[in-house]
Length: 140
Image (cartoon, rainbow, N blue to C red; front, side, top):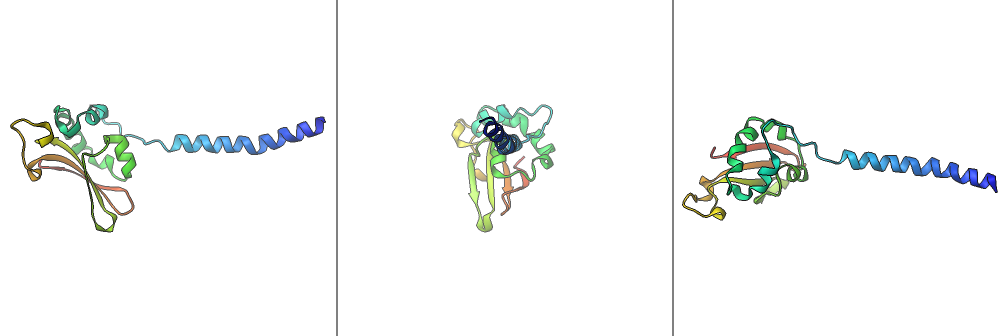
């Protein structure tokens, strides 16, 4: 009876521990490493939908000055960083653009509304391999 018990413990340690270890490595390696930029509060950005509260307008210069730090992220990682985009365009060949509005959007109301071409917005372009390849502030 003891030999069977010892053998079962050996099998348990041989297979279960490596599976648990690999699972933990995968769980912790899948989290997005958000770029650390002094003064950039991502939660304020995410909570300021369409830029109606003016928080994005205060933060957009930091994004523009450090735009190279936001390249090569995939779409899901960008959603983790900036929240869900307010608008999205899908082009041929699998290219996608995310739009985050910063100022002059009709959703905010008021007298400061402009046409879509005149609105200030953050554009993030993704290539066919789902990597961000360009970060651009439109009308800044």
